[in-house]
Each structure stands twice: as structure tokens, then as C-alpha cells.
Length: 389
Ligand SMILES: *Cc1c(COP(=O)(O)O)cnc(C)c1O
Image (cartoon, rainbow, N blue to C red; front, side, top):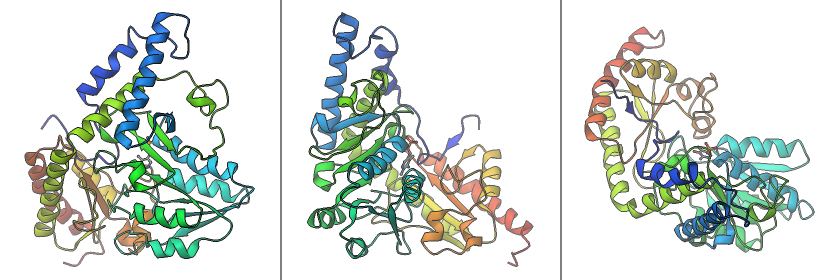
């Protein structure tokens, strides 16, 4: 096999050729400064930015002036947490989040804890679900923000965001959701969800890397992210990345237009992987929910007695790209914070494998993984001092 079998779509996806086509004019002829009105190549870029903002807003069910482009999902998450904390610090210093958030949220919260904020990291159930009643019980008169992810990047759990947003609203608390994994894998309408802030990253749905956005509902105060020029209504300075914006808009439109078919296809591939692994590998534990409430493209298993990293190395030799836990955590030997939060003991939290498909994944690729994985697990177990089977 020369082309790798790519099963790491929760980490990043390939750039769609249609998206590249949509970006190309802004990487070539239309290089003008989108904020300059004094010459045509700038005006054209400026008009493009307005038009792109409108297209993106339509896709998310919000208004164009509620879309703020950022240079990544991490940036959008950081801005939501730190920007709201700073703008509302006179009102209170308490933030509620979950113990299974992406590190962009967790580390931003830990930073705030060093600066006088209190953060509640809510526990989750055995499948990674946050209980809305726990959210409500954690609210105090000092709570200014609740941030819970729409879907988890490691184990695919979809959280009850609309329900939590209702609770937030009833208590006059702002609600942010990291929807980075959700977009492209389920319908995401910020207005319907009822959230005040929502993060998106283009490269998780076949858009370009280094391009994200933060939806900020009109009427919400937020501190400026980057001080400088007047771009993004003065809140995030930097000469506009028009090509990136065009790529994000195109990828979002394609993802939503093809959502029904692509979700159906990804779900089928996901289930084929889950069923195949359970049938052929003993002592394999599926992490996260089985069907309902699981991202259509995520598979995460723990294999008793062996390390996730060793599986990855052997899969790589077979041309399969996968990951163990979160991409940020791989490379370190810490067990995944998500797997620990769903109650796995340390030794099992080390042995997890995440396989994530896209609409471009084929059935043949899934079957190839199902053919090479069982002997890999068996061989590693034979080498493990813990294994007696
Ligand atoms: C990938 C990811 C991010 C970070 O997005 P970048 O654009 O890579 O910075 C944030 N949150 C979740 C849930 C993710 O999966």
C-alpha cells in the first residue's frame, strides 16, 4: 500500500480540492489588503470578506456581525474563555467547564485560576456525558461563564448543549461551546443551540489549517484578543487572511450541503469498525457511547494489557495513520485526561486507540484496518508481561 490509510480525521482532515480552488484567487491575483478602499485589488478583497462573513453566518444560523475570524480553534477557545473572564470580572470570578474539554479550554482555565478565578471542572458519566443538573448545581452568584464542548474529540461523546444553554440563560450566565469536532459531523446552528459563543476550526472539516472563528452573540461584551488595527470590528487585529476565510466558508457550505449523505456514510464505516473490532479482538473496550450520542466518525477502544503507542507504531508500519487519545497528548506518556474522567484505571487509559474516519474513507480501508489490527494486538499482548491469555 503506498497511499496511507488515513484514520486520524478527528486530529485533522485533508484539504478538499474544491476548497483549495475557492482559496486560490486570494493566494494569487487578489492579494490586496482587504481593509484598503483606495484601490481595486483591495476593494475586491474587502467585498469578498463581507460576502464570506455572510455565507458563514447563514451556515451557522447567526448574523454576519456575530462572526469573528480567528487563526485556529485553539485561538477561538482561548478568546472565549479569557475574553469573557476579563470583560465580566466585575460581575464574578467563577467559570464552569467539564473535565473532558480540549486542552485549549482546560489550559486557558488553569491560566485564569492563577489570576484569581475559580473554575469548576464537572465530572462526566462513564460514556463522557455531562449531566445538565450538575451544571445547574454548580452555578453560584459569582458564575459568569459555562463552557462545555459540543462533541468530544477523543471518545466522540455529544453533549446536551441546548439543554445546558437553557439552564445558563435561566441563571443569567453566558454559555460557550467548543463546536470544533461537531461541525461537518452534525448540524450545528448556534442560534438553535441557544449559546452565546461558539468555536469552529476549518481544518476539522476539509478546510485549511490555521483558520477558525468565534461566534459572539450581539450584546455580549468581550475583551479584545489582539490589539492593533480595526479588523474584526476592532477586536482581533491582523491583515485579513482572505484565502483562509474563503476556504472556511467553502468547506462549511460543502460540509452542510452534503451532511445527510456524509453522516450516513461515516456512521456506517464507524459501526463497521466497532463491530469488526469487537468480533475479532477479545478484551477490547469501546470508550464513549455506542450509537446514539456518538460522533459519526469516531471510534475509540482500549485494549487491555498493551500501550496505545505501541499499537500506533505497528499500525504505521502497515500504512495506517491513527492516534491514541488526543494529538496534543501523544508524544507524552500521560494517560488521556478524558479516559481517566470516564473512570478508566491508569493502565487501561494508556492502551487506547482512536480511529476516526471521514466521508472520503472507503469500506476497503476499513476492512484493511480490521485485517491488520487483530494480529498487532495479539502480538503486543504476547510480549506484555501483564498478559496471561
Ligand atoms: C482540534 C480541536 C481544537 C483545536 O483546533 P485548532 O484549529 O487545531 O487549534 C479545539 N477543540 C477541539 C474539540 C478540537 O478537536
